[in-house]
Image (tube, rainbow over the protein chains, first blue to last red):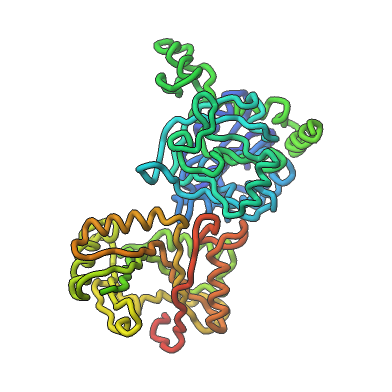
Amino acid sequence: MSKSFAGKVAVIQFPGVNCEYETVAAARSVGLEAELFRWNLDPGLLEESLAVVLPGGFSYQDRIRAGVVAAKDHIMDKLSQLASTGRPLLGICNGAQVLVESGFIPGLHWERVDLALAPNVMADREGYYCNWVHLRNERSPCAWTSSFREEEVIPVPIAHAEGRFVTDDTGMLEQIKKNGQIALRYCTSSGLVDPAFPVNPNGSMENIAGVCNREGNVLALMPHPERATWLRQVPEDLEGEWGRKRKAAAGRNDRMEDEGPGRRFFASLLSGKGAALPGKGSAGGISLLAEKEGRE
Amino acid sequence: MKFWVELWVRLKVVDLVQQTAWMTLTEKLDFNRFLCGLARYSYWGMEVEGLDREGVVREVDRVIRMDSAFTNQNKHFYRLMVRGADAAAAEKIEERGNLNLDRDFPVVPGSGGNNGPIHACDLLIREQGGERENGFTARLQTRLPGVTVRGMKAGEVWRILVRSKDKEEAVRLVEEMAVTRSRREGLLLNPHYQRHEIMRTTDLNVSKEWEG
C-alpha cells in the first residue's frame, strides 16, 4: 500500500540528490511531518501534501546541465499543478536549479525558462565553491522567509559550482525586482550588499541568493538552510551573532541542539504567511495566497 | 603565417551524458520520430600565428596530447586539424589524432520513426562571457613557444542526426531539441548564459553505409 503524504512535507528524492535526509530532519526539527518521496512514485500521492521540497545534490549527476533532466521528469507535471495553485514549494541548491530550468522561477510566464543558474564567476578561481555566506532577507511575498525580519542577516552555507543567477532579459529582471521576488541577497555580516567576491560568492546578478515566484509560494534558494538547522552546524569562527552564540555554546552538548539560523525557513511554513496546516490538504497552500492578498 | 586550428575530442568509453540526452529527448520530449543518432565532443577552434604549418601542427599536437585540459590519452579520441586561415590556403588540411570525424555518424538502427532522409547537424554550444575561452588561450599560450594564439572558440559540439525532409528542417528540429525555452522545450543549452551555432549540416543519404 502506498504511503500517504497528506499533511506532510514531501522531500523529492531524484536519482543523484544527496541532501534529502538532512532536509527531512530539518523540516521535522520545527514539528512538521516530513517524508522522502521517490521521484518515480505515483505523483498523485502528493495531492494532499502540505508542501514539497526539492533538496540539494546532483540530480541525474548534473548531466547536460544542472537540474535540466529532472526538470523534464513526469513528476514535475504534478509539481507544476500544485505550485501554480499555491502549494509551498522550495528548491534548495540543485532543487533551485530544477525550479529555474522548469520555468517555475521566476514564473512570470509559467514554465517559460527566463533565468539560468550559470557556472560561478569568482575572483582568481573557478568551479565548485563551498563556504558560509550571509543573506539579507528582502521585502518579498515569500512564504518560506516569512519568519525572518525584513533585512535580517541570515548566515548559511553554500556549496555549488553553478549558482550564478543570470538572465539575458533585462526587462524581466526589472519586473522581478519590482514584484519583490528577490527574496534573499548575498551580503556582508552587517547586511551590506556588496557585488564583489566573496560577499557575492558566484557573481549572481543583483547578488541574488533566492528568488520566489510572484505569489510567494515557490522559492529557488541556492544556499543550504538544512545545513544550518542546529547550532552545532554553525562554525565557531563565523562573523556575527550566530558565531558568537556557537562559541558560547562550545563544550555544552545540550546547547548544540539549539536552533540554527536556517531552521526558520522551515518554521515559516508554520507561521502566518506560510501556515498551511496539516489536515487542510490542498487548501493549505491557498491560504498563502489569501494571506498575501490580505496584506496587499 | 596564420592558421585555423580545430581540436575535436570524444570519449573512448560509453558517454553517459550523451545517453541521458538521448533518453530525455526521445522519451520525455517526444523527438523519437526524428532523432536517430547523437554524439558529443569537446571542441576548440582557434586562430594561431606561427612560422610554418609543419611547426604549428607539431607544437599544438604535442601540447594537446600532454595537457589533460585538452585530452587524456587513456580515455579520449581526438582529431587535430590545421588549415591556412586565408581562403587560398584553406584547402590543404594537416590532421593528427585517432578520431575519424568523417565516419563518426552513430545512426541507431530502427530509430527515427518517420523514415525520412538522415541529416547530421554539428551544433556548437559556448558560454557567454568568454572567461573559459580566455583561460584556454592563456593555458595554450604559455605552452606554445613560437606560436601566437589569437582567437578561441571553446565549447561542446553535439552531432545530432535527424530524419528530416531537407537540411532546413533538420536545423529547425535540432534547434528545437537544443534550446531550452520552457520546461517542455529544448534540452542542451540555456540561452540565458549559453550561445549556439550550427557548424555544419551533412546529408548522410549520399552514402548509406553509415546506417545500421
